[in-house]
Image 1 (cartoon, rainbow, N blue to C red):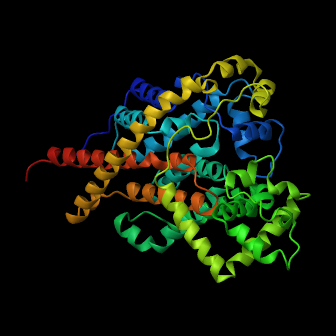
Image 2: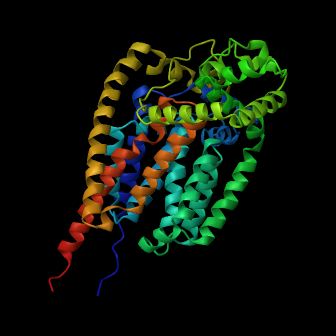
Length: 455
């Protein structure tokens, strides 16, 4: 008869939490200030002026305002992001039998040292909430817990879902996959994928989508038009139809940039031709729908999506878009305005000095690429051994679900918008994480068997 489980000493749990937070904040600590991106400026103004922008929901702006304590510090935003991510990662490790908090911390620290994970959690941008979304969905569908814990996970799902518009597509595809494979999943994990969980997640996803509604209405077709421009589809459509239809974009026929970023953000963007976002969305929606009705353009869509997705799988370098934002930039002005106590820290950060910032990142990216290759080979070998030996315990639902999430993230972002290292960095670290999870699961299984009494 087993005795009662020993509770872990509070100081060990506290120490592991502190170590995880430090590891996940490592990139920000190295930088001397939370890492920022051009979009950081938009999120700050959105949260502090309570404004829903045309290309992003207000959710993350509000998160910044709350976790910065109304502009006291951006460091507390990084700490909050790191703690949330550490919580869901730790819960996932606990689900495979890792009851020791220091062991869970060791996994998080190792992944943080060998991948771009700290550049995800240490950056003031929504990217960290994509892995939080994936882990939260796994925990909701594949683990059990008391009501308080489940309520927390549902709240985390709603918050992370509403952070970025790509999460609608990611969640929809993962739910569809779970629905199709539900019977198979329940043979492996009998309590998994309950209908009640499906219903709750769908309801929360609808609520989250409504929260993002204003941004979706203003920009969903614009982002897809950018992908069409990047692939040359938009230019060809205008060449073939401007003689018969009076599109606003026809004024720029022949000079539409074949680059998604330039199409969306350049000061000479053709989007400047539209008088407002209603006119813009209406025309671009019509062009997108019409292009799918033409076989030649449909083939171009399919080819472009395949090429973009393939490229995205090998693009995950850290530092994408993390240039210097000195005086005169919108971001510098907004930090000065809303987080005035940290302007000196911001100006002194490595990111503001190309030599101090980029040279170490070149070496870091070389390391991350080598680690990625080794981790991928190890992961494939572990999966092959598990399949060949029919050791289902070696191929955990956690690994399969996270890898599916990685693939879906790549397909949604690259297939519908553009290819960018930042999109890959969000989830690329899941490869070494999953390799470690399988190794840890094997170790825990072996230890459990060795502790069983001989027959």
